[in-house]
Image 1 (cartoon, rainbow, N blue to C red):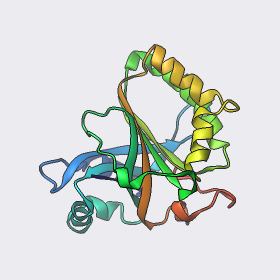
Image 2: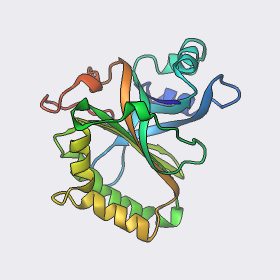
Image 3: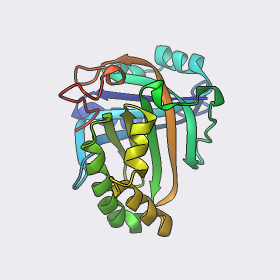
Image 4: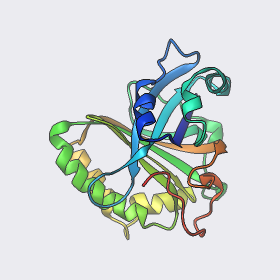
Length: 236
C-alpha cells in the first residue's frame, strides 16, 4: 500500500466542494481509504484554520491506482494548483480501523536517509476536546519552533477527525522532538493521552516520502532544507 497527501489553495468557496467530493473505496479503483479535510497551522494557542486551503489524505493499493485517480477523477482537478506527495509507511503506532496500515520493510529509514514524513490520525472524544487542545497547543508550539521541521499542517474534519502532517529533516531530528529530554512537551501530551485517551482511536505513521509534485507557497517542501529561510509552511 501507499499513502498520498494532497494540499492546495482552492479558495474559500471551493473548500466546501473539496470536502463534499471525498472519494469512496469501492467507487474509486484501488482506493482503500480517503478523507478530505480543512487545514490549519501547527502552532501554540487556539487552532488557526487556513480558510482557503483544503487537503486530501488517502491510501491506495499501489502507484497505478493513484495515477488512475489523478488522471480520471474530478477532485484532483480542484487540487491541481497545489502540491501532493506519495508516502511509503515504514512504522505505525496505534491503529486506524478505516485504514489498516501495511508497512514496507524494504523502506526502513535510517537517520541519514533524508526527510521523513509523519502523519497522525485521530477520532476525537468530544468530552476530551479541551484537554486535547491544551496539550496539543504546547506540543505544537514546540514543533513549530524546531528548526528540523521542514513543513507542517494541521488537518481537521469537525467534529471528530483531527490529524497532522509534517516533514522533518531526518528520523533523528524527529525523534529528538518527540522523545528527547530537552523537549518534554510532546512526551507530556503522550503521557496524558495514555492516562485518559483524547481519541476513540488514533494512529501515528512514519513514512518515506517520494514522488512529490507541484508547489505550495512557492516551494516544494521535500527539497527545502531546514536551513532555508523563510521555512515553508503547508498551512497557516
